[in-house]
Image 1 (cartoon, rainbow, N blue to C red):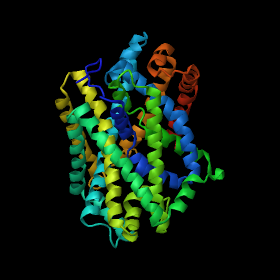
Image 2 (cartoon, rainbow, N blue to C red):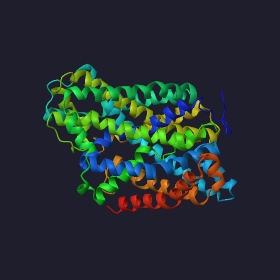
Image 3 (cartoon, one colour):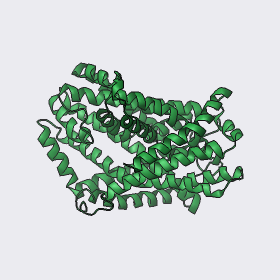
Image 4 (cartoon, rainbow, N blue to C red):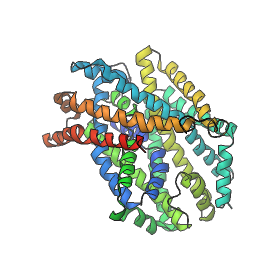
Length: 451
């Protein structure tokens, strides 16, 4: 078993690292959130701006996060501290890494309940299907799910148990072995479902919706939504990518890996649109149905389409794979910190972290029903946690990572880790990480908190 400089395991192959990173980046945000955000913001106009933001913001900051992780070879707080002190900068930069851990843990608590919905719907798809379901029945079904705390807790814990088993087994035997099976399966499922839609109908309308830009629809609101989706979809400032970078061997190119990760992440989001929108258009449903697009709108489409029973099973299996692989990345960074900070074994750390998330996720579940009347700052518990992580921790953390690498990490260190080969490409990246990414992320933060 190879170990990194900090005592952690390393990825056995570039493919394993890429699958783990893509698995972390590709989550419900791509398959569940991207289609309805695109639907709410004009379809193709949103996609165009999203692609620009993914390349201009996502690529530079993801490279920055991975280079800090590989340079430090430890959990995010310790990696930030090691890199800072090596450049004779303040050790307090470690708190930026700590923000990533807090964001990951907070997101995991809320995310686990949503993955629980997916697993429950997968179970429904397998056991009963959605035959005969109309709009009223689909809405009633989802309402019943939210009103059933015992059922939600059960499926939430099932998702956490699967995640726990993967991280408990370690980097190579658990995470790498799992993602090298699950991620190709996810791509195959997406491809199969998209091809299925070519014959099932609605594909022409979906392609027009996603890929025919209407520039009149590019408003400041659409631009802000696209920046936010690109930033959060790729998974920066959550600790996961920095942790995965700590397990990355020196001979793996960070720039090439990041390009592959971002292309795969964006490709999955676009393919998800070609899976979801044809069913929506072919059945006369609303493409801008919001959060309910997956859990309330699509069951109606499954009920009406030929082969809807099989389609529904494969679709929710796809969602489950995306959700579990993202949960692994969110929880792994906290486990790595427990190992570094307290000296716990991986097994001990995994049980403690997963157990903590499980306890708090029960509160998340109860906030949908039993505790729904208890609010803080006009939001329920999930609303507070979501706002704190997505609107505060992620943009502030992303801004500080970019600012730190752009202005406080010596150019020679960045150049060594990134090893572009072409000096002009390095200069372009350094310009973006200094002068473009921090202001863009700052705008996201200011606009988000001022809404």
